[in-house]
Structure formats: structure tokens, C-alpha cells
Image (cartoon, rainbow, N blue to C red; front, side, top):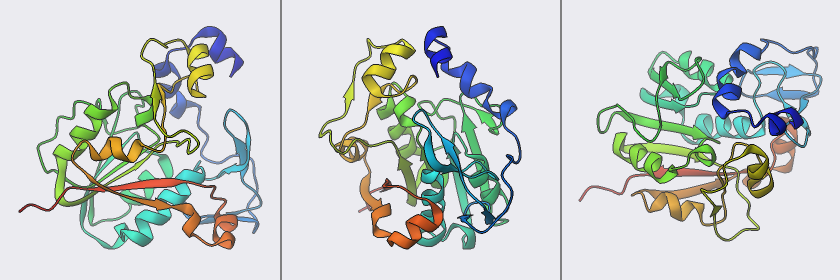
Amino acid sequence: MASLLAADTAAQNVYGGRRAARRPMLDTPPGHGRYCPVCRCWYRRFLPFGIRRRRQALCPGCGSLERHRYLWLYLETALGVTTRRLSVLHVAPEDGIRRRLQDCRAIRYTSIDLHDPGAATTMDATRLSFRDRSFDLIICCHVLEHVQDDRAAMQEFARVLRPAGHAIILVPLDKNRPQTYEDKTITGTEDRMKAFGHPYHVRVCGRDYGDRIAASGFNVATASSRTLSAHTRRFYRINRLTLFDCRLPPIN
């Protein structure tokens, strides 16, 4: 982290090179201490991850984090993605979830990323080239906090989503902050770290972020990991998270 801040490294150099730096399996032997619902494997322990080195965060097998494990549980249990015929757009795809969706024969899967060559198509989420009403499901997990014009991306999601579809959006929320904070004059990695808590974030998402999504034309419902039992959260190592399940208003 210190080297990133000192060098003011461009985000595309970091995120574009992350796949090359990945290993298919980290040096943690299998066991029965932790279970990952994404790769469906047991491990002796999960690994620390993040700027603050969160304990028991990273799955050694598929690389899922707490948010990815909660996201997958929601996709599988609340939306039943593995049992439905769906057209899916996955923005900045996580490897483990990507593999699970690609394994579902009934799913027509498309992934995009602006920097990561592992995605099927290089594309800016604020300027999607897909036709209107192309997808039944859009997945966008911890992406919009990196996007300067996040409202443009939300509007594009609303455009390409089918009337009965779902756009599942997660961002890091600061629930102690009533309003989202952003300042486009803050551009350096060190300054962004001080202002937003991360060198590549362009805002801090507050409690009003669901209203921000709704302004793009969505009906927004929230799902909280706190509705899971304490045992389930410990079992999968899931922290406190909020997910936005966004749908288009009914057509009159």
C-alpha cells in the first residue's frame, strides 16, 4: 500500500494486472474450519486481506471475500440463479462467481471490465454497447465507488435491464454518514486515501446511496447480511453488508 501511494500508481495498472498476479490456490491446506459457498470447498482457515488486513477474509481457493460470499448466497437463495434461464451481465467479474455462473448451462453470461483482461469484453459501465432490455440480471459488486459518473452507469443498467429483471449492486457503505461524499478535485491516490479511505475510490457512499440509485429509475430494495443467523455469518465468514436489489417499475 505504501508503494502504491508513493508512486501514485494508476488504477488501470493495478486492476489490469491483478489477474496475472493471481494464483489458482494459495498455500492454505483444506480442512473443516471454514466453508466457501462460492467454490463449495472447506478450508482450515480463510486468509487476511485488505488495506487493514481483515482477519479470515479471503477464500484460499476462489479468492472470494466476505461480500462475494454474501452476494452468492443471495443470488442462489433469493434469486435462484442456478435454476433459471437468464441473461446475465457481470460488471468487473469476480473469478469465483464468474465460474459458478458460467457452469450453469441455462445462463447466457456476459462480463465486462474497463481494465481486467479476464473479462469477456473491455467496456465502460457508463457507456454500454448493449441493446435496450438485453439482460435479466446485472451484477455490480464494489465497482461504482470507483466510477466518477456512477449515475451514468446506473442509468445504463436501467436501460439494458429487462422489465422483470434485477440489478444487484453492492458498494462499501459508511452507515455513519447520512450523505454520500465526493469531491472531483481529489485525484491523487494519497489524497483519495485520506478523503475516501481507499486510493482508488472517488467517493464515500453514505446511507443515501439507495436514493441515488432510485433516482436513475429503479425501485430499490435492500437486503442485509444481518438477517442471516449469527451461526451462518460465522460459518461463511460474512461481515455486516447491505445489498441493493434494484428493479424497474411496472409498465402501466
